[in-house]
Image (tube, rainbow, N blue to C red; front, top):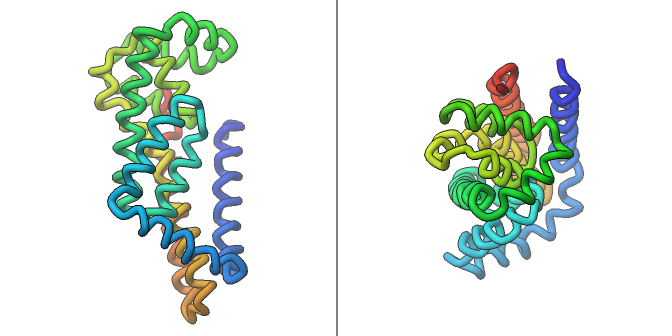
Length: 222
């Protein structure tokens, strides 16, 4: 097992421990949830619009993808959150790849001089089709930086139309965690009598998602 795999597993073990902590002590922070939910509700149909605009504006500045995924899961739930998050980040990454290849090629290539791993990955992707782009997107690095790099390396946008779908494999568990954290906190705050059962089901669901992502990405990087 590589150091990256070990680090990723440690992160998700910590996430699972965090969900258990929320199920046990979530009542201490549950009183904040109504204000949070009311704030989202007051925005009405503008809530998803505000979220997507924030992602479109901040993702190019290398704000961590994890924050957007957590926010989507917590604010909109796992299903709607996935739709808003996936749509916004997909469009943003296509735009950044276009910028990286057309207007920012020189500064991006200069920055890649200090990142040998990413430079090697995008160079391979430039010589292949959508499959190689998808495999590169499986790498858990900042997707904005990777988009700029793919563009600067000369990867065609037509390859990215399919290849960019690979990034969601390691982003969706984070979105699920955001939704599960809110659910655990709500259960603890309302004195839910079956939190043990629901909490275990939530942790099992997160575990299955994380295991699937690790299995799919192991040994499939170019």
